Length: 137
Image (tube, rainbow, N blue to C red; front, side):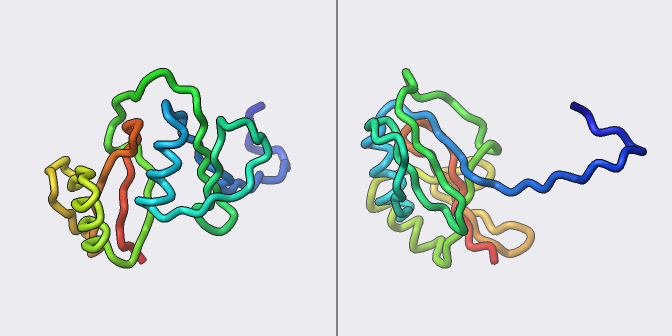
């Protein structure tokens, strides 16, 4: 249904509830998000060993869902973004774990400083989903 001007329908209010990623290996992806990004698991209602739910702040969740046949290629500009206080420290953690990371231009092992002064790095999760980590306020 389209909203038409001239009608007095209330404007709906939207807020983000969750983001879902469809993965090939639930255990591997769960370990990545909990151990590399330090996200906390939260109860999920399915209890079918095909879902992991994670808290990503203020009632927002990341749902990891088992069932993808193979990883896919994604565009870097289509990404999840998380903020932290220590991007250089995070990039060192990635180095220690042998996880490649990139600048906004795709340059390996180079950090980007955005025009607003925030530092950022990009990495891929085990299924190829791009993730930005920055220190934006």
